[in-house]
Length: 72
Image 1 (cartoon, rainbow, N blue to C red):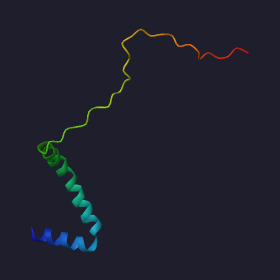
Image 2 (image 1 turned 180 degrees about the vertical axis):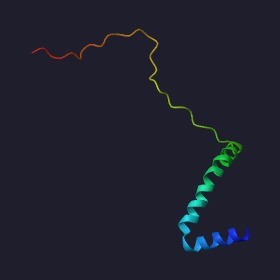
Image 3 (image 1 turned 90 degrees about the horizontal axis):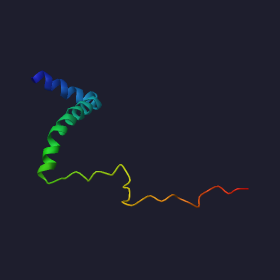
Image 4 (image 1 turned 60 degrees about the horizontal axis):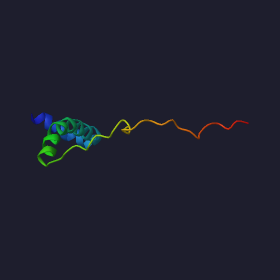
Protein backbone atom coordinates (compact mmCIF):
# COMPACT_ATOMS: atom_id res chain seq x y z
CA UNK A 1 0.00 0.00 0.00
CA UNK A 2 2.87 2.35 0.76
CA UNK A 3 4.26 1.83 -2.73
CA UNK A 4 0.94 2.89 -4.28
CA UNK A 5 0.91 6.05 -2.17
CA UNK A 6 4.51 6.85 -3.11
CA UNK A 7 3.72 6.26 -6.79
CA UNK A 8 0.70 8.60 -6.66
CA UNK A 9 2.74 11.19 -4.79
CA UNK A 10 5.49 11.05 -7.41
CA UNK A 11 2.94 11.11 -10.23
CA UNK A 12 1.22 14.17 -8.76
CA UNK A 13 4.52 16.05 -8.83
CA UNK A 14 5.59 14.93 -12.29
CA UNK A 15 2.25 15.08 -14.12
CA UNK A 16 -0.55 16.60 -12.06
CA UNK A 17 -2.95 16.54 -15.02
CA UNK A 18 -3.21 12.76 -14.83
CA UNK A 19 -3.87 12.84 -11.08
CA UNK A 20 -6.59 15.48 -11.48
CA UNK A 21 -8.15 13.52 -14.33
CA UNK A 22 -8.24 10.36 -12.23
CA UNK A 23 -9.65 12.26 -9.26
CA UNK A 24 -12.44 13.83 -11.29
CA UNK A 25 -13.07 10.53 -13.04
CA UNK A 26 -13.67 8.79 -9.72
CA UNK A 27 -15.66 11.73 -8.33
CA UNK A 28 -18.28 11.69 -11.11
CA UNK A 29 -19.86 8.29 -10.41
CA UNK A 30 -19.67 8.94 -6.67
CA UNK A 31 -21.68 12.16 -7.12
CA UNK A 32 -24.28 10.35 -9.23
CA UNK A 33 -24.96 8.06 -6.28
CA UNK A 34 -24.80 10.63 -3.46
CA UNK A 35 -26.31 13.89 -4.79
CA UNK A 36 -29.94 12.81 -5.56
CA UNK A 37 -30.67 11.58 -2.00
CA UNK A 38 -29.17 14.78 -0.56
CA UNK A 39 -31.29 16.94 -2.86
CA UNK A 40 -34.39 14.95 -1.95
CA UNK A 41 -33.72 15.34 1.77
CA UNK A 42 -33.40 19.12 1.30
CA UNK A 43 -36.87 19.25 -0.29
CA UNK A 44 -35.96 19.69 -3.95
CA UNK A 45 -38.82 19.07 -6.36
CA UNK A 46 -38.38 18.69 -10.12
CA UNK A 47 -39.82 21.46 -12.27
CA UNK A 48 -43.20 21.05 -13.92
CA UNK A 49 -42.93 19.44 -17.33
CA UNK A 50 -43.11 21.76 -20.34
CA UNK A 51 -46.20 21.12 -22.49
CA UNK A 52 -45.43 19.50 -25.83
CA UNK A 53 -48.75 20.29 -27.54
CA UNK A 54 -50.87 23.40 -27.91
CA UNK A 55 -54.19 23.13 -26.08
CA UNK A 56 -57.16 23.18 -28.45
CA UNK A 57 -60.16 25.34 -27.54
CA UNK A 58 -63.45 23.68 -26.54
CA UNK A 59 -65.52 25.19 -29.35
CA UNK A 60 -66.35 24.53 -32.97
CA UNK A 61 -63.68 25.47 -35.45
CA UNK A 62 -64.45 28.27 -37.91
CA UNK A 63 -62.84 28.37 -41.33
CA UNK A 64 -60.27 31.14 -41.66
CA UNK A 65 -61.00 33.83 -44.23
CA UNK A 66 -59.21 36.95 -45.40
CA UNK A 67 -55.86 35.33 -46.12
CA UNK A 68 -56.52 34.33 -49.73
CA UNK A 69 -54.12 35.34 -52.53
CA UNK A 70 -55.28 38.39 -54.50
CA UNK A 71 -56.61 37.58 -57.96
CA UNK A 72 -54.85 39.69 -60.58
